[in-house]
Length: 212
Length: 212
DNA sequence: CCGTGTGAAATTCTTCACAGCT
DNA sequence: AGCTGTGAAGAATTTCACACGG
Image (cartoon, rainbow over all chains, first blue to last red; front, top):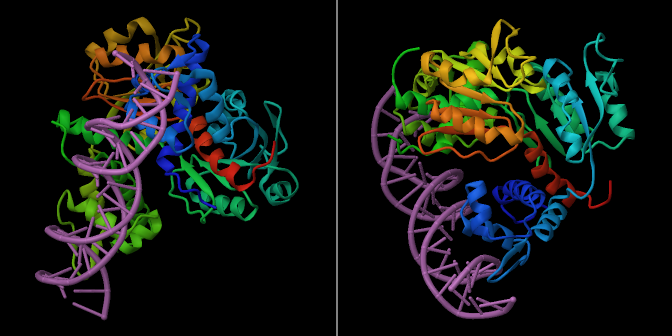
């Protein structure tokens, strides 16, 4: 049941929601697509077009009610509930992710972690139990986990992704530097700071083509 | 001098380069756009079209020489040199970034860090000196820094970005959860795990619209 | 008047399909 | 026979521009 709304549109909605949160916190009650667009570096027409996929949320001549639109977006994105997260791979990065409080603030509850190393499995980090990898399938069969965060080494990542998918996980946030394969119906997003830097050096090189 | 090569194309080149590195490490000497595409979930036509912006690197009937193409891509992207990086904001996240060794392995050398807290400034982390924020402009005026990594709280991020831009930094990797503004000619990339998760919950909700 | 919602136009990006080289 | 490089076709995305409601 892949809806016919473009994925680029879906991916912009969280940005709109975040800007609206900020506006709401600053006391604004109404906002125009113009103003919202300036904050986000998006054209007003794009915002209006994106929102029009889901309904008519604005008032002509007036704009959008900040609180109402925020509620609508949160409902559309499924942010009006909490989601259970597991983290796989508790090296330095995985450790930092467990200690990060930004997920829970947005309704993403890390309920369990997994690691291959016996030295780490069995410990608790931030109150989250770290289990050995071979308990992954059993755990996922009995407990609800909506999103998996993968922070294992590149060599292990595709195997971990396959195991998560086989266990029914439908959303994966991958920090490992590989292009992981997932079947239709499973969402995956890649976080890759090195690749992002490498996309910027192209432009740096253009600006000042000298040696470093 | 913004070249007329689409940014989406530039952003795919690092992925091609990485896949080629893996292929080279596994001993492959030749690869077709078909095979490369399967590894990356990209169509062969897309790979050939992307590469055609830069030259003719393949041999008809044969494919691409892995080492040659990798060298060409590294040269195009400016990965055949090292780049100096500074990290601003040494909280938990900034700390993890300083301890991460994936940047230096790819030629990104973190040469300095900055933090507003007197408790952190003055210390060394992984051999990298952490300086107080008010030394930022002075440092950047005298030392070459190509890329800045921003890991400060959301409220401080735009100010930090502005200061970096004013000091001549032309590439910024932003971990703060805001849509930062930069002028024309400055590259910025956003790393935002929460936004990525929020883009996936839309599809999770579609699959199983129940409460959590 | 102001600003939304939206068909239509314009632009950007991807895929096709095949000539041509090895 | 196999695979690249590439114009042309097609699809996706963004922007325009204006009718309409507040």
